[in-house]
Image 1 (spheres, rainbow, N blue to C red):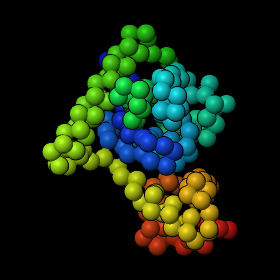
Image 2: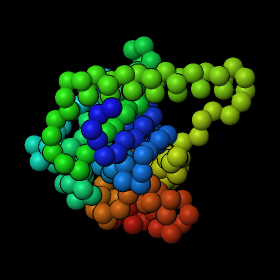
Image 3: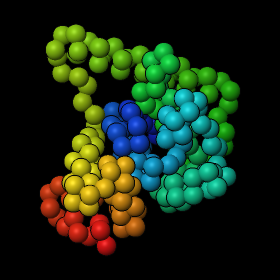
Length: 200
């Protein structure tokens, strides 16, 4: 088992769709939320490339992910290691591992984490396939980002922009307010934030 302090499994389909399906603790869940809010980080890159992303010191990742590196370090993460969840050639998400201290994973730890990612992907694939075959309920995420999709649609309709532009505005506003994207989306959906605030 890799020497890490926290882990999370997140299913992803594209930049706007993400569901947290497992987290070792609140710290891991928070770090996943940071990646989603900012749209950058090891998990985002591992999903995009289909390759592991291994960063033993986030201070070295400043140029790669300037916003994520700062936010993750502020939250206490010093190292991050992300492994894509693959079913064949299809990317379904990532296994993200976090550490509070600097240091690379050994080659044995990378191999172990790769096996864990493969097992997680296969298990999730089987659970979703079984749910589809039997009509039973699919595994529920720990955190649903459905409100982000709803809020994105609300912003797009109000501002007469594409969904991509609406999502970018929502993400930028969350960042400028130093808030999680999901929290901002929930406030918009529940009308605690006026849509006009995003057009300013």
